[in-house]
Length: 187
Image (tube, rainbow, N blue to C red; front, side, top):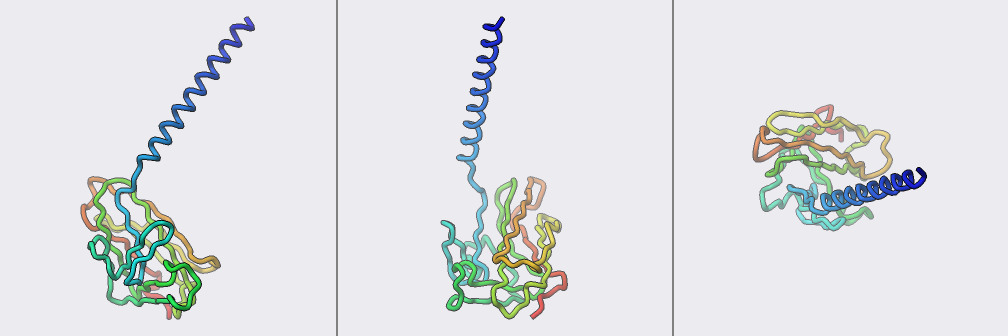
């Protein structure tokens, strides 16, 4: 009887080890083969590219492949290139004075991640009291989140969103709409 229990325990242990090894193999192979289908790294308010974290961020004023565009009217560029100790990617910014958007050419169906970095810096514009709404447009307007920079001492503030694009949603250019709650930022 004791031998039977021992055999059952060994059998159960071997089965668990095999399952764990199989799961880790499936997980490793799934993560190692994944490649983000659409990648946009935008250096807002800049006419030059910047490499940061092994990624090249293309200046939004020189997006030559036309995969990214934005509302140019009512915008202001802040450039602190010579005076800021911040990493180069955070030395330029684009301020929208009215509801504005960035448009991206999304070619793939599936889950898309969006990471926005907001940095108040030492600009003339008072960003600490501004409240933003970020919406994604795939045929219709879908608010993702409203937030503010008030009581936020660390810079940059990073907001992450995800959005699923299906076959039934509009093809081609999709918009990211940025709106301040007052319709414009205070100066």
